[in-house]
Amino acid sequence: MSQPFQPLLDDLVDRCFSITLHRLRGVRGLISGWIEIGIPEGEEHRLRERMEEDLILLARLDWLRSIMHHAPPIQRCFAGEAPQVLLAAGLGVGTPEEAGERLPDIKDPEAAVALALWLQGATVAYDSASIRLEWFGNHLEARLAVTQDHDWTIWKNLFGHLVVEMEPHRIRFRTSCFARWKEISASH
Image 1 (cartoon, rainbow, N blue to C red):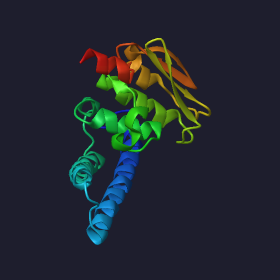
Image 2: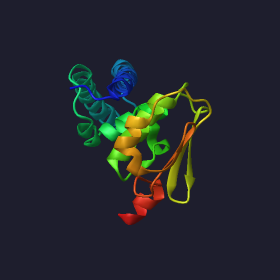
Image 3: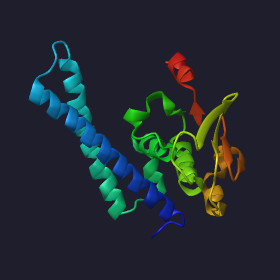
């Protein structure tokens, strides 16, 4: 059974697939270059890291392809690497590996998926100038320079409990949803 916001999720997963494929091509190009010219002395660990990333990206592509063909219930997107992958694509910062610290630390995976879907439905352009993340105390807020019209009724019914404030161009999440990198590091 199709979910009412399935078109948003389908578009987001399609973007994730393209972004992951692009990252995989880059990783493979780097590995191929090292094969051609040789690995610089002392850089063997970087080759192993890229080979491990290659396997992760291949598995991710397989997972994304399966979602594209057999849409799971949204709750299945709250597990594993899905929240990070969907949020990185929604923010327009590539894969989680490329995003690095530009990706907020996720305390509640459901909130990451909610934000990714909100960005997918509201964002007109995916670049760093059109999407801004800011902290207000311990609340993460996403702001958009330009938005497109979207009916948020179904989204609010499913994810409204995660939000403190919501307007067409901005959304602010509860403190239990995201953390700054230093907050997560200090608690470990």
